[in-house]
Amino acid sequence: MLRLTYFGQSCFLLQNESFGLLFDPYFSGKTAAMLPAGTPVSYILVSHAHQDHLGEALPLAKKYGAPVISTAEICNYLKQQGCPYIEPMHIGGKALFPFGQVKLTAAQHGGGSIPGAIACGFLVFMDGCTLYFAGDTGLFGDMKLIGERSSVDYALLPIGDRYTMGPEDAAFAASLLQAKNVVPMHYNGNERTKQDPNRFANEVKQCCDSHVIILSAGEETVLKAAQTENGSI
Ligand code: NI
Ligand code: MN
Image (cartoon, rainbow, N blue to C red; front, top):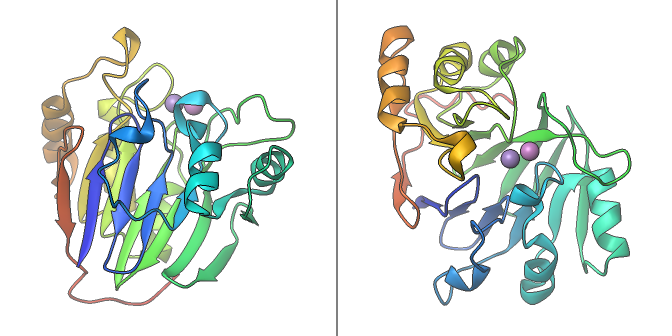
C-alpha cells in the first residue's frame, strides 16, 4: 500500500511497506521531530536549495543514513557538508532505485544560494503509481510533455502564487499534465502565499477532470495505482 503524508509547505512522505521517500524536508519552522516515531526515511528528495525545501535534509540524512536524491550541485554541496550518501542526478535523467525509478524534471524557479544550483521536480515511479512532484515552479508548456510521456496518477503542485504558480495556473498545469489526481502544496506558509485550496479545487473543475485531494499538515492519503499502467517513463 502506497501512502502519501503531507507535512506542510512542500514536505511529503511517500511510503510503502519497505521504503519511505521524504520530499523537501522543511517542517514549517518546527523541527522534523514532528515526524511520528518509527517513520521510515529511506531517501530524501530535494528539489532546490531554498530553505523551505532544503530544510532539514542534512541532519535527517545523517540521522537516518538516507541518501539524498537531487541535482548534482546540491548533492555535492551536501556531501561537502558531511551528508553520508548522495544520489546526484540531473534534469531529464532517470535512475533505478530499490523502491522504483526517479526522473528529474525541469522547474522554472531559482535554485537557491548553492553555486550552480537550479530547481527541479521529480517523477517517481513506485508500485505501479506515477507521482509528479513539481517543486517550486511557474507554469511551463513542457508540463504537457510530461503528461504525454508519463501517465501521471498524482501531481503535487504549488498553488501559493507570488513565488510559484497560483491556483489558476496550477489548475491549468493539472490539465496539461492530464493528472488523474492533484494535491495542492506550497501555500499558507506565510502571509505572502495565503490561498484557499478550495478555490484551487474550483479552478481545476473549470478546466479538467483531475480529482483534487486537499491535505492538511499531518494528514495522509492512500494512493491508488492506475488501472491501465502504460509503464512509460
Ligand atoms: Ni523556492
Ligand atoms: Mn518555496
